[in-house]
Image (cartoon, rainbow over all chains, first blue to last red; front, side, top):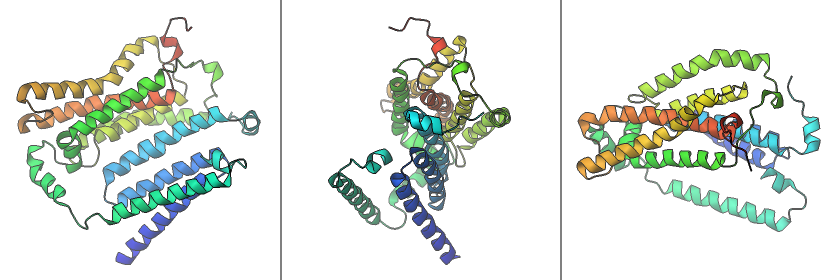
Length: 91
Length: 234
């Protein structure tokens, strides 16, 4: 059990660092925002592993949820006209 | 950041400098983390011994809303200031014709989720005294419901203006009012006598939940709804 929890923590930490790197070097802004939301969700898992469920609740809802939504709204306003034609508006 | 770094015009020196800064910060953080003492510090023991006088059963809530309530008060103040700052850019048009149409999935999901928002938020607020939960978590759930309402193009009427703006200020007002009352009563800021601690904490938590639940969707909206202000914009 000890080895399993250590390997879980190790994989989680590795995934967090990798996601953070991919978020920063992605050449599409939309991809970066989505990766940021995924990063927030993995960070929630990290908080749970650190025995901090209150922080995990706040992280999931505010950081991954609300900050992600704010970033998506900002992305919408920052699109260049070329990108505006490319991304379809839903319905 | 990704626009900036991936732009070919950004010189190599700038990229190298940014990478160096990021590496130094990471090393500093790692050093700070590794120099922390292993095992529980004496602070955790002190919290545990003072728990019976805090009025709640959960140590995180006790620290947030009793022992370190000054920090929480300033956090609520910061949130309020953020809304004031974002809303100072002017009103936002909520005209349905200009917004993306709501699809059937979003509409159905919203109608199912909105009642659950209040149920879950109320539960998290109440259980925060004894288990993980509390005002911030409950407020964030209500905020999610608020963002969902904005996404489904809910049109807030002008009658709601006083309630929303009052609700935004309610958390900070309640906290500052409580701080003033404790200062006048016992001369020490934000100390709660054990017999009134749990009910005071509950009152403050309710006010904070309302404030947080209104402030975060207000930030998402980006300004006060245009149909609230009748004045001519210069």
